[in-house]
Amino acid sequence: MSATLVQVIVGGLLLGAIYALFSSGLTLIWGMMNVVNFAHGDFVMVAMYIAYVVYVLLGGGPLASVPIAAVSLATIGILAYFLLVRHVMRGPMIAQILGTFGLALLLRYSMFGAAGANFLSLPDNLVGGTYEIFGIRLQASRVVAGIVALLVTAGLHLLLTRTSLGSKMLAVSEDATAAQLMGIRPDYMQAIAWGIAAGATGIAGALIATFFYISPTVGETLAIIAFVTVALGGFGSVPGALVAGLLIGLIESLSAYWIGGVWKDVVVYILFIFVLWFRPQGLMGKS
Amino acid sequence: MTLLSIRNLEVHYGDLIGVADVSLDVAEGEVVALLGSNGAGKTTTLNAVAGLIPASGGSITFAGERIDGKPAYAVVSRRIGLSPEGWRLFVGQSVENNLMLGATPLADRSRAAPLLERVYAIFPRLAERRLQLAGTMSGGERQMLAVGRALMSDPRLLMLDEPSLGLAPATVEIMYETLERLHGEGLTILLAEQSVELALEFADRAYVLQVGRTVMSGTASDLADDPEVQKVYLGMG
Ligand SMILES: Nc1ncnc2c1ncn2[C@@H]1O[C@H](COP(=O)(O)OP(=O)(O)O)[C@@H](O)[C@H]1O
Ligand SMILES: [Mg+2]
View 1 (tube, each protein chain N blue to C red):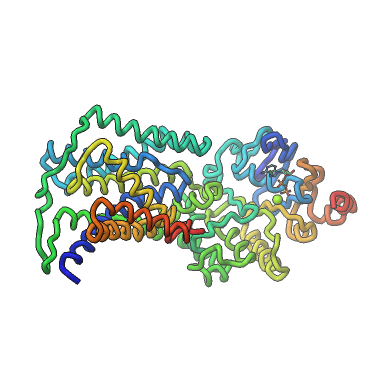
View 2 (cartoon, rainbow over the protein chains, first blue to last red):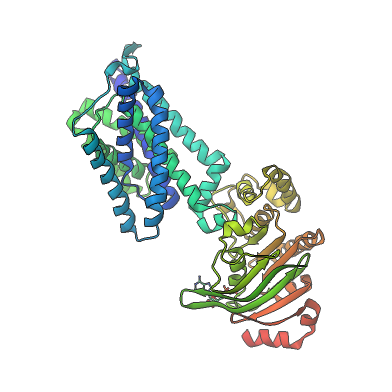
């Protein structure tokens, strides 16, 4: 294997880890309450602007912007739950779709108003520049982002499967009425899920901002990746989102290398449709 | 002392009537059975006490406090446990997780571990299967888990919805021996049961429900000797 190919593979996996991170929040919300959050990509967008502001005002890198964006977005997620989601959940499916879609547009156009339509970006060398290891050239920002994303996604999975909070959240998603018999308030658990999911997008957004352009519409692009990742991995499955995210990052990267950058999305969607043909529940979803 | 008191309870499911007029009392330390054929309103009554469905009329008083209108999560923290119809287990989680979820209402979290040991002592079968998913268990084991989970909140009043339903006779016997022992330790029990014989053998007193109304009540031995009881049951067949 040539060094370039290894570099393409490593780069794809690092990118895929970030896809996994911001998709895991979407899949968590879906799994817990059958709600599709169309504002998910715009949560990431807001986090990217927070990272930009942290840089411009404080001169801080991800060490500052990741926790700030995580806390800000978690707060936005909890507010979105109590002010919007909790109410539209009682309505028909279309109310949920339009409700969260409305939130997406609200965030997007507020950002247009506040920051303008210009593409912004953080300086390349904010996170340590580029290194060469064993003949592979790696951008430090991507390595850091990929590794942090992997750790946070794994942490989210452990939280859901190994802690009493996770057990309560799963209980609400399995049977909210029975959960109440356990003294659990379903609305509190759902609010926490929104906080965690949005907080994860906050981390993802602050990481992505270190190597990706920032604009009010960037959320759209990212949301499509998140939906594909969630559907491919299986709705509600965090490990599924991890595997699917890594896979999509890898396939994108390889097809850009072999076939050409413009074709990478086409390859991803063909494979996506192909997988759903045989496994409509996704790779790791329950049928 | 009266622990639970229901007066003229009325519950609706939309336009349909669940129960029309149910009144009953359960004294501290007592075992009270709710009898009645399928559709008589036993489940509706227990679920209304637990706060799973709102009462549209009447009152429910527990330990001197009105609890009708309170949501289920607030009722259970007042130490009323329910093993519900259909068990409602969290089938995607382990036996131990199900039990620990039952301990959520405890004000003092450090009591969860000793309660877990106690439930495992009562149902050794659950201890053997503690890491198994609840969804992979047999009917009898699920019934034990539902009762064990309700016990994890350390209830003053344990409500059981048909603890013998769908179980093999040997399992039913184990279940009732267990309940007998819990009663001996001072637990107050309100149970719904279709099997009249079984219920009257175990309970101190019983109420008979018929199309959503309490139509008869008395001590278990009086009701067991009463030909009217048999007639009511045969009549509703
Ligand atoms: N979810 C429900 N929706 C509509 N009607 C119901 C529902 N549950 C129970 N009922 C009705 O309420 C009445 C009492 O039922 P239930 O309390 O389940 O009786 P039991 O437990 O004694 O068999 C029955 O007429 C039944 O059809
Ligand atoms: Mg019933």
